[in-house]
Amino acid sequence: MSDKAEPLHTIRALIEQKRYRIRIHAVQHMIKEGFTEDDIVSVMQSGRILENYHEEARCLILGYVTTAASSPTPLHVLCDHSNKDAVDIVTPYIPQKPWWRTETKRGRIQ
Image (tube, rainbow, N blue to C red; front, side):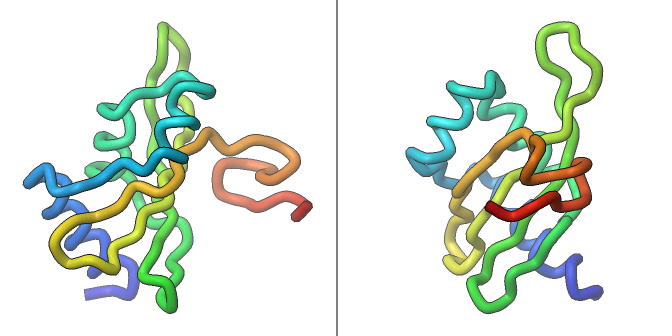
């Protein structure tokens, strides 16, 4: 299995079993940016790993959601898979400038 496939396989299995927790920071982004828990779950089930942080057992998943009659919008989901019993949804967000030039390329760091 590839470097990125193994954590994604584990994460998807936990999501399928509804064994995930949404942290308060994630809820704040959901309210502010207008996406839902279903959007996050969809991205985690169908997206791809954009960045893998092995030391922290975290990864950044990129997927796309459609909100309120708009075209597909990129959504990043930072998740923590250090606990084998559940995945923590740490921070989901819509990538924006200046932090991201595109949904896959980082911009300037503040």
